[in-house]
Length: 258
Length: 258
DNA sequence: CTAAAAATGTTGCAAGCGCAATATTTATCC
DNA sequence: GGATAAATATTGCGCTTGCAACATTTTTAG
Image (cartoon, rainbow over all chains, first blue to last red; front, side, top):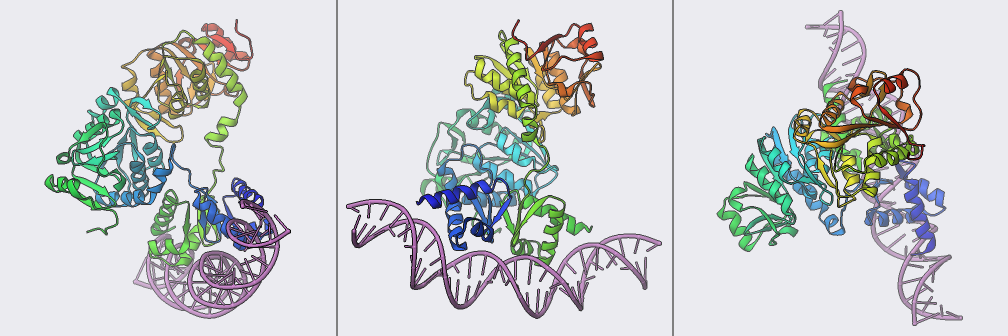
């Protein structure tokens, strides 16, 4: 990476703080290079997630969620598709419970764009923030001890409060899915999920295929308690067998609506 | 303005929450209208400052109104000093209740750096986030309806939950301070503040001098209920008179500790 | 110093976009 | 219900962009 190139790309990023969008021609003129060079710069910066391309230019990268690791970013498209598929399943809902986790945040973002006049209960900071974009959605945040890395409330208060409500759907993420059921890395979170399930008519689990065939400390659901799994790849082996045995509806996000 | 047009433009704005940029062709296909119609929509939305055009599409508008970040920047030095002064007054505290607002966030930051092994109840996301830096502080977030612009929970659930707790200090911000007492621009917030006061042994109000001699809809405290006002300038006239009459301890942040 | 690698420039063309003028449909109001 | 206004569609043309292939310059490394 040449000095000139690094400096130019840094300058482009800086420019984006002053303008909402930049055009390739302008950048080329400004830096005295060809448009093709700028185009290559933008492509590289996009690759690194530093900005987003538009036709003829670039814009700032969308603000990423706190602690978005590389591994998480890998599955961002899968999650977006899972989110779309999920929203299609809950069009009739009035009251929802949403768990924490990055996949549920994607679902929340989809809900905020496509749904209206509903009530959502959540213990996740991220979910609440995303939903609040839509003023017709009533967001009720659950109490509890604030768990910083998860950005969510957990503990006895959370669970006790949940017991005062009922919902149409519980939409939950997972750290692992195995024949044993769904589990989360955080025991405190799984206890909240478990309660959400009990207080909801139906339980939907959203998780990409990277969660298949792994188990984590907090097992919060066995498959017979789950109504639907929304994911991006066909499960196989023992996991698939369990889903079928327990009549869990499987919804693949790359399939069109039935 | 036709119904269809309004809905379409609203949908376009909503879509921008998912994607950093939109392209006219895609929008046209999505809404089953011609590209020219979308172009007109985008031009109108741009006119209204709701988004920014790009060649072939649109991106989100950059925040132009003085929002949270701007508000925080205002009087930041004064607030930092107020925060330091406040923490000096609550060294003995075990349990605190913290309201929302930018001044209380500063106080929270100070608490996170200087105090340890305490429990804090708050309805503000900002306060919770800042406090969570310190692992020895137990942060309990209150439930309620999420109020996006304030970044806090409000409503009946918040108040009911608060009634199950007691604290040593309630530390509250204010939009206005007058001889009538302390008031907030948001009625829902002031109801929460009011309850926090009732559930705490002592009430501390933190506010810079720009709040002097103004009143807002949600009056949550008269001065005889307040134990201490921490601010950056000496109040005058009627306000000072009231503070004295009600034996409110006045603590100026530019004074050294007594 | 020199060769390989990286970065940048140039060119041509297909596809995409903006814009204005005009036509057509849809909504609104009396 | 019909006149009028608003909203949308259509069309044509000139300009802009994306892209790929290839040439040239600059940088890097042995």
